[in-house]
Each structure stands twice: as C-alpha cells, then as structure tokens.
Length: 212
Image (tube, rainbow, N blue to C red; front, side, top):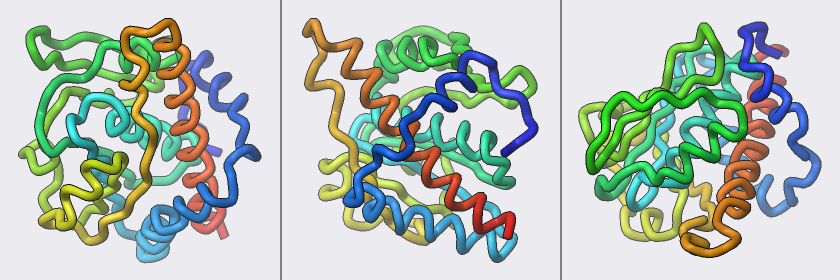
C-alpha cells in the first residue's frame, strides 16, 4: 500500500469499502480496464485515463477522482486521470458535497455557470482540478490514453475517440435519476461508493502485478 498519506477520514472510508461485494459480472466488465493498466505497468509506461460521460457532470468526475485516489492508495506510479463529456455543462454540486462527505477536501477556485474546484485526497498530494469540459478539451490528453466510457449514452454515441489507444466501457447508473427526490443524497453516496469500490479493486489488481 502507498505510504503517501491520505486524509484520515478518507482512508477510513476506503478501508471500509466492501471489496468482496463486487459481482462476477462487474469484475468481468472491469477486466479490460485492469488489463490496460497492467500492460502499461509492465512496460514501465505512464497510465493516462480519460473518463468520459455525456455531460462530464457526475459519473465521469467520480470515476476520475476515485481512480486517481486509488492509484495513490495502492502506490501505482505514473497514473494520470482526466474526465470529459461529449459536451461541457457543470460539475453537479451534489457530486462535490458527496466527495466532501467521504473525506476529500474540496476548494472552490471559481464560480459561474461552470465552476472550478480543487479536489485533494491528501495534504501533500497535488489537487485534482474539477470542472466540466469536452473529452477532447486542451486540458485532457490528445493521444496515448484509454477512453473509459462511464455511461451508455457516451458509449453508444462515441464509437470512436480520436487519440485513444483503447476505448473501454465501464458503465455506471446515473444518480441524476434521483435529483429532487428524498433519495438524492443517499443515491449519490451509493454511486460514489460503488465507483470507489470498483476502482479500489481494479488498482489492487494492478498493484499485485506491479509488485511481483
């Protein structure tokens, strides 16, 4: 496990994840994602991951942030995580508040229609800059990356991602379905925990290979 310290509350959340509750079907779905990273590790190459959804407002951000965090937690070097959408909108506020509830430190950098946040998982870790953007925005890599498709609309609507070495579907249900309901906060937390758990499992598999 990585010696880089995570915030204590976040580490507690990670250590409580129910790793054994990932279904066989989901483990199978994650295998191409894991295999891409294992191949890079064996070659000593950097791992660039661009998590893509329709609006870059919910699932793609959760996936990006948890993937980067789990890379640090499991001590996998040279992992660089990004996110984007088929169009830019805004990071949904419930995503930021859910991550903060789970132990991340969230700092607003700018306001407006598309606010920008700094997201930190550890005191000495570089912040992740979170805001909505298109998947091919200049902020994201233009080559040598895996495109991780986190929603069915983007997966089906973008059969080709320019510059991607590999296009890998890892789909999640949209917590937006519960916006404005009494279940909203619980469903956002549930989706974030699922993504955290699956990223923990994936990077644990990579760590086992890297440390052999």
